[in-house]
Image 1 (tube, rainbow, N blue to C red):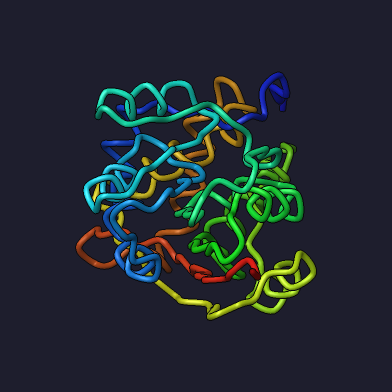
Image 2 (tube, one colour):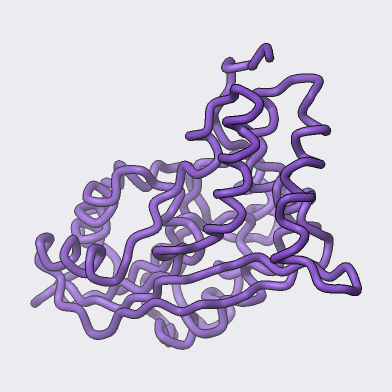
Length: 255
């Protein structure tokens, strides 16, 4: 098998994300409630994507800055009239200017979590809060296992199947504590997630680099992964569900 290793970086299309990933923002009600944004607060939306939740923060009366690495998603956010900037969550450099840092479904993409936490701490005013939800320990475990199995059989790079940071509350709580945060609440929440447009579209949206490495064989690899997952994640009517597990946290920077 000739494997294409020229690109292992995840890229995003705002249009594709809106079609196949809209559930990410739609299912963020619980973490949004934990944040409870107040009018006039200065809030950083870390990993804002296309701005769907940034818009909700602004509608609540907050003064919001969204930060993301994807030019295409940032362009979609600007079309909403939002204030956003390109930035790397692993290298935040804001000087104690935010009342809160909020993040949904983004922190698991940032592979230097200690640096992310340090940057969040720098960005917060004393007494500011950090509220986030992202993939926790066990998130999409069946999906990753299936991709790894097919990747091994096809002599591909199995590591591209699961590049994420999915910590337990204990591990992430220790990281926050080491950075000086006071944890108000933290927990792991299984959240089986219906995939209205199917498993293949989820795989193509969120693990594009894994399949791209197989070149012309990408479609057959995709078929093989889907067939492995069908017995456990697809019901008799053809409805797919992803095995999501989320970690949700609220922490405060001491005064």
